[in-house]
Amino acid sequence: MSRHFRKALVIGGGIAGPATAIFLRQAGIDAEVFEAWPWSTGIGGGLQIAPNGMHVLAEIGISDELIRRGSIAESFDFYSQSGARLGSVNRNMQERFGQPAVNMCRATLNTVLIDKAWCENVSLHFEKRLVAIEDRADRPVVAHFSDGTMAEGDFIIGADGVHSTVRTHVLPDGPRPFDTGLIGFGGFVPRAVLADRPIGRCVETTFGRSGFFGYGFCSSDPADGVMWWSTQPSHGIDAATYRAMSQQEIKQHLRLFHAGWHDPIPQILDAAENIVVSDTLDVATLPVWSRGRALLIGDAAHATSPHAGQGASLALEDALRLGRLMQDGHELGQTFQRFETERRPRAEKIVALARRNGNSKREFSPTGAWLRDHMLKLLLPVTAKGMNWMYAYDPRRAA
Image 1 (cartoon, helix red, strand yellow):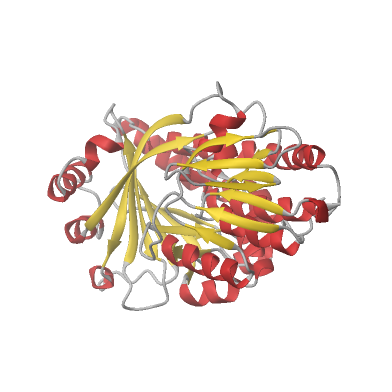
Image 2: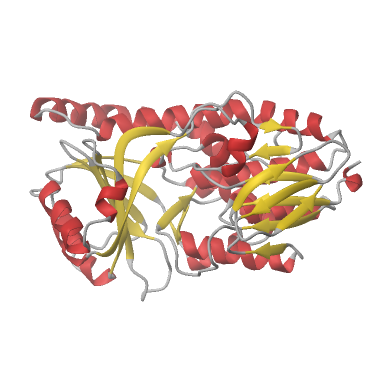
């Protein structure tokens, strides 16, 4: 049946889009990817792909390359603002779940996915910003772009992120992304900054009285920097306001916010350049994920805040599962409904977990922070076991 679907239009060239196009090609369906932004090999910060996401990258055939170019994360270590060790989670991931957790530059992942898509004969188009979708019976679905061009296909996949344009077609009056009240800063610093504090393959993270800080390697290349990030309450100031500031003003804000935090956090902030600022948004639940011949996947359907480390992995899972379902030969609407029925419970559970985790990064009184830190010491081992369900999921074998 899938042979009757000759061509898919995939909107979004980040992670979900190219991966979905690759799996659609494997299902015998031509795929064209349309990305709003120009092609660039240097965009984005660092991220982690969890074992469940690495299974998908292995299925695509690029996991070994990304392990070589990234940095295996052997643990997440937690500290208090003063530097006291609180505990560790996510050890022995490869042994327990069949794949490691791997830190990598987002730009590296995107480049490798794009290259693989090209090798799979996926057509990729950049600077194609979607403005409208026509979905009329007995005609191809049509995507209209801001430059006046259009493309026709048998169905359209919205892999265009938290601010999805395809979502506005599927749900014209649907819910908007939810602002979690936290704001993120991040970037890279030279490895020399950590010369006196070798962290190896650990990701080190710190809970403050207000906010959170983390850093770790995301590349095997000694010339590449260390990724770092700061999460803090927004206090009503959005990312756009910070982005309008100079880099020096943003750096000064970070220095003041993290004043008194343990080394090497001050040194990292002193060395920071090209600081990226982002609002922390999620999409907890939508009434539906599809309408007619348009389907939402990845962040367009279920954007998660970064506090569970699963956003990219969920998007990769979506891509694989959709490709497999398209191979089953069912009618398009039935396939879309099966996809939503299968994927929604897991995705929404992770979005909710990430939102709860974000609550531990808000403001606490000195006593409240002390209690939280002591509770973390006791609860981290239990919490670690409670997250195994996320990592143990193998999308290749999902029913």
